[in-house]
Image (cartoon, rainbow, N blue to C red; front, side):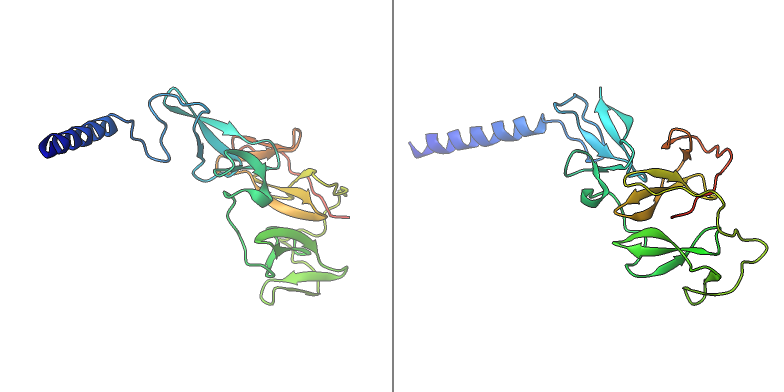
Amino acid sequence: MKEIYLIAIAFLASSTVSTASKLPIFFEDECPAVDICPPKLISHESDCSRYYECIGGVKQIRNCAPGLYFSKSWRGCVRREISDCVNLDCVNGEQLPHECMCTAYYKCINGHKARRDCPPGQVFDKSTRNCKVGSCGATTMQKPETLLLCKEGAFMPHECQCDKYYECKNGQIALRECGKGRHFDKRTLICVNGEGCGNMINIKQI
């Protein structure tokens, strides 16, 4: 009786191994050969506003709606605050120079850059990382001429770099980036494929 019991255990074990070997094996960033329901979603390599959807074993690129970012844990596009995809791009509290405006700078809030303006008659000093009395050099921009009201949830083009834009969030003008190979379209106010910038316009927080 004991021998029959051992034979039965051995048979079940071999059957389990055989069944397991037939299961599909794929890595986290790869699509399964057979579609599953709901479809598998994969994070983009460098752009948190995009992701992949697996269709027929092939990764199809998808774009999140403006202001949303992909989240692996939520299996979809969510607000920046709850996304597990967005990387911190600065240290909280530090102040960083603006790309082209000597009278503006960025204040790091919750790991992300928010644009600030120096008081009238002052410029941002890159060495001290603070505003000081002075004037801009010949190669830097003064305060922009076009004034735009920052409304909650609105998107605005960057002053001089077309692959960046601003999002009005909680009263802050937060710096955002479109990702490699994409630029911010000032007409549709979304990131689009391609690196063509067109004419840049200037904005200022009021």
